[in-house]
Every structure is written in structure tokens, then in C-alpha cells.
Image (cartoon, rainbow, N blue to C red; front, top):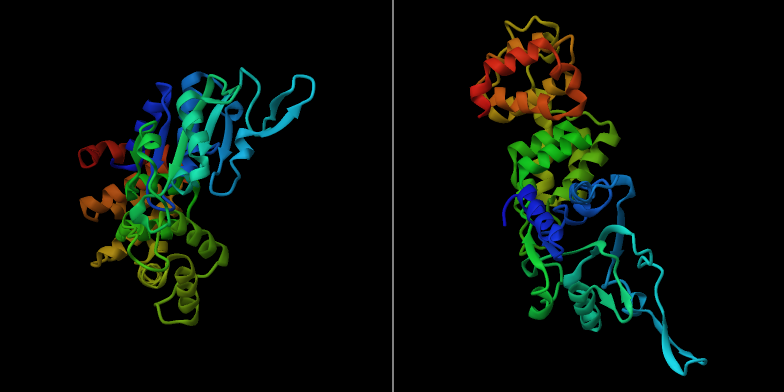
Length: 354
């Protein structure tokens, strides 16, 4: 499979046809997040059946952390009938009108004791006398064998019950999600310079490395610290490196902290924003150009966008596109995006965005 958004749409197509789907991919690539309330797949399904997103349910089963009886129920002798009845678990809905998404988490870690129950639940939508409401969609998630996460091979019989959809993280897809979610713009800019932070998880590597999830986590720690990167050699820079290493591993943490130090080498941003930019140089280094566009997009508003665009126009077409996409996608840039100056500039440069 391909990009994140393409994979989500393929899973959606399977689910809408009443068929279970399995999302597999490297750790931290957004499999579970897409299915949770507020996630893109959860929202698409709610819209598909015409219910409010806040009312569309979300249920999880974690075979690696639960006993199979947590789902199949516990048998007890019925003295009146002389037969064995079952106490069914409360986690499964008994309202026939219930609608929502049932997620089987980390199915590739499921013990063998779960196999029979999963066969029945996934294929027949039943567990003994219990039947899932028709409005419940079944999704499973799991890592791949090559991800080094200790997963076992699913039986072919169980795998055959799913539409198998692989998610391969893509920086551009993650960039839009991260920008919308308010991930620190400097960290987002780092992934544009080093897209492998998002895309290149290698299960053969021992120890920590970057994933979409760990990059987002580092961004939160970094932003919360309030630290301002310097030239890469100060005590503050060393502290930022230790933060990055704790989340991304030694190699990726070093590259992340090195990129963040680029923000200490930006051109005169204040002069650009205030409209006296005719003598502000255009950076030669590509990483400084990327960081400059991220910083200017962050500062753009309805009053200074015209000043900023005059300097942006002196840059390469590639940097114009980087800046324009930032303004168009980030919710925080709405005031700049809705100005006459930006709309006219966007129309004049429309050929660059094709």
C-alpha cells in the first residue's frame, strides 16, 4: 500500500462494504489514532452512516492484554434449565441500534487461545449466542513481522477474513496532520528537511529511532521546555539534544537538534515582518531557507502578510510553495490566508502549486 491517506481510504472502502479491515504498519504510524474518536477514519465512518461524530461509538479489544473470557464471557450452570449459560462482558454493546467502530488492537500479538474467538467474531460477527449490532464496523491493527516488535505470524485463516491494508507513513500526509494539530512548527520544518524522520522506520535497528508518534512526542516536550536553540554548542543546545535523544534515539535525536539550531541563523525576520526587507539577504543554505519559511508562516497575520510576501517573492519557486502551503493548511494562519494580498499572490503563483 502507499501513503497514509490512501491506506485509510482503502480501509474505509472495506469497512463500508461490511468487510473487516486490518491496518498494519510500523510503530507510531497512526493506525490506532486514525480509528479513535477525532481520528480521520472514525470521522469518515460516522459521516458515511449519517450520525454525529460525537455519537459514533468506539470499542477496543486488546487480545495481548486480556483473557479471551473477557470477550467470550464466563460460563455458569443454570440450575433451572440444567444447561451452561454465559455471563457476557459489558464491553460489548447489547443495544441492537448501537453504531460504532470495534478495534481489535495489536491483533498480531494475539495468543493462540484467542484464535477461535477471533475467527467467529470477525467472520460471523458472533460469540456463541451473542451477535454484534449491524452498525458496528470491525477494524484490527498490528505491527508487521519486520518491525521488530515481537509479533507472531497470523494464521492464514484469520488473515483471510480481513482486507489487509498496509500503512507506510508519508511526510506530506503527516505534515498536514501535524500542522492542523498544532505540532511545533520548528519540528515540522525539521521533517521537511529530514523526511526520513517520518518515513524510514527500520525494524532491524536496535534501540530507539524516530516514528511519527515519537516526533510528535518530542515536539511536545521541546515546546513545553520553552528553550530557544542556539548555535548548536551551548548548554541549552545540549539539553535540547538530550530531549531529542530520549524520544528519537541517538542518531535521529542528533539530527533533530542540529536542525533546530538552524533557527539561530535565520535572516532578519523582524525586518521582513515590518516591511524593511529590501536589504535582507536570501539564505544560501537550503535548510535555513526551509526554517525561514516556517518562521515567517508562524508569524503571518492579516497586517503583515503583504510585507512577508514581498520578501518571499525574492526566494526560489520551491520556497514559495513551501510558504504558500504553510499558510493554506495551518488553522492558525487563517487571518493571513483570508487577506486580499494572499489571495492575489496565490492566484499569481497558481502554476507553482499544480
